[in-house]
Image 1: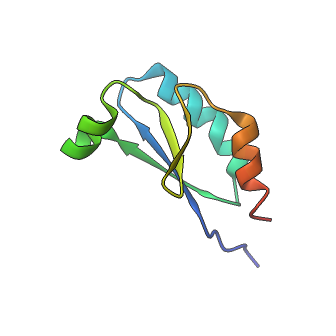
Image 2: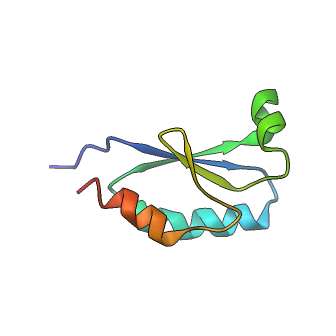
Image 3: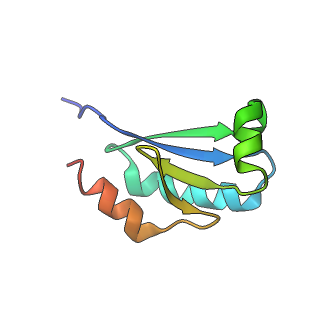
Length: 84
């Protein structure tokens, strides 16, 4: 029986962003099977582009910024711990 994923981390990113690639690569193994990860390209929507500008990557959870530019592993682990 597979577990039901109940929450999503949003990563605001853009194409050809080296920091974004590094963050996503490090994030996925930390949350696998416990949280969804949705990568959102800020250049696909005007409101995202205006809000984030060059300030990517940004990880959000439940409307709050968890980390930006670099992965905050401790913060991610604290979120993951809430979803056994």
